[in-house]
Image 1 (cartoon, rainbow, N blue to C red):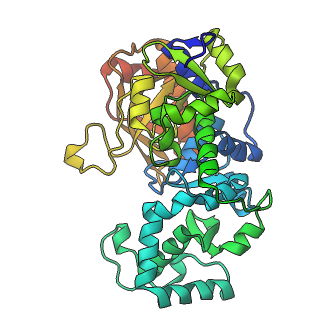
Image 2 (image 1 turned 30 degrees about the vertical axis):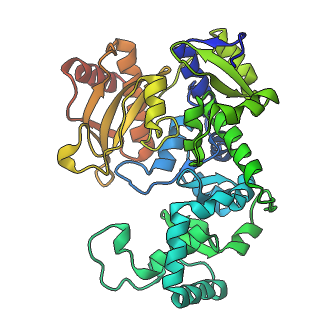
Image 3 (image 1 turned 90 degrees about the vertical axis):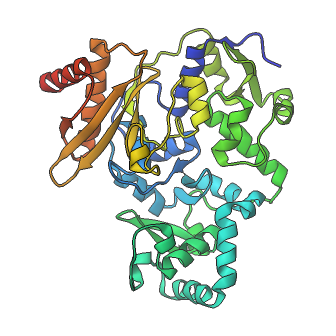
Length: 412
């Protein structure tokens, strides 16, 4: 049942989600190292992906929220134990304080990675146990510390055995990532990594119902506002979350319900966002931020959610054969003042310092007004400079759009 006090337009619901995700307003000060951990705590998790056509996804997600910051701050937070890596939505950075929940989550044994790892352990028990014993004795190791042997074409199925075994032990929880070197995982036995966490690691009881409840609440808080059908995806919960399951959380006041124009189901809001909800309902949330988003940004990774909430049809095409791609290999959504106004297919040429935009599109209903083009051009230039590729080269865009962007870069 929705609360009659809270009735939102679709634009107000969009701004509430952006505010919860840290994407509503332009940062007001320069980023600090602690802001990296705070951003992950706000999102609850930060998905890891190794594609680096532009900056690797976790760094790009943070840049969209923090502006210019040192990517090394993320690596340092992991090495210092303020963040940890585990399976959550996918492989993710999570706040150290949340790691006990993830390790206790009874459903992890049903995750595909856990099942695959358990099967691999059954097939290669002696070799895997020897590898684990070696790390326990000799200390942290990378996959690169093992001889390559013959390396066929790329792909996880062509990984050398030791790489697969390291990943299997990571999925099973016996190994953890203690730090990264040039984004390569450095593995150590779990007990040593857990000992350095900040705050200290404190195991929690493996009560599946209580853990699921906690993950549901954390998902809603991270999303700002959510339909019931969107909630399970955030932590890959199974089965899907239903309105009946949320009813006790409404009754206890842990969740609030609001009506959203055009929705035939309630929107759920965490009680921690009660003030934001009130501001949204009063039209007091103002969107000022323009940024390029990673394909694996929490705002857009659920394609059904981003379609329903922002009217933005989006698919990651890096895993699609080239002839079947509609937009390109690594397409970044463009956020502008509360709307997803377009997308661009980018590639960073690090050796020459060039940020290439192969193609840029605006959504069909977006008018290429001067302010929009100026602010999009500024966001692109900021990302390019932060990335170390300060020369922007636009290959293709609609003529009026291309002219406006080039003029903004020239005048800027």
